[in-house]
Amino acid sequence: MNKPRHHELQSIEVSNDNKCDQCTNSKCCTYVTQQIDTPKSKYDFEILLWQVSHKNMGAYKDEDGWFIIFETECTHLEMDGRCGIYEDRPTICRSHTNDYCEFDAPAEEGFKLWFPDYQSLLVYCKKRFKKWSTGNPPPN
Image (cartoon, rainbow, N blue to C red; front, side, top):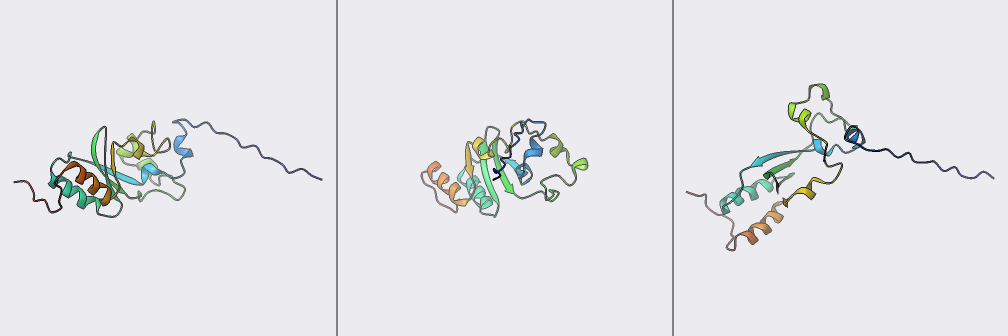
């Protein structure tokens, strides 16, 4: 009787040199962020609430400030997760570093504040402003 064969799994040491090759979901190519002015007034937060009310949009604060995040896949991302215009990719893509990226840990872990939707931001607004109500007029 033949014994079943056990295949050894080969371990791969992941470094910054080959990290992108090991990444199967290309997370860094599935969103765009835009830094915004720090929201301070109720009206500023009204605008932010409106923005995160849209599909695939959120907001966060990290050590660099406040950002809007648009969850949208790059149109040049190939089925295998590679860039379809790698040789001609934009400068911002060329300068992106993988020293610490979503392959290492979800980006949300580095956020001081994370608002993936309207409800999460509304809860924050009600805590931040004791007399919160929607429909705050713009500042004069």
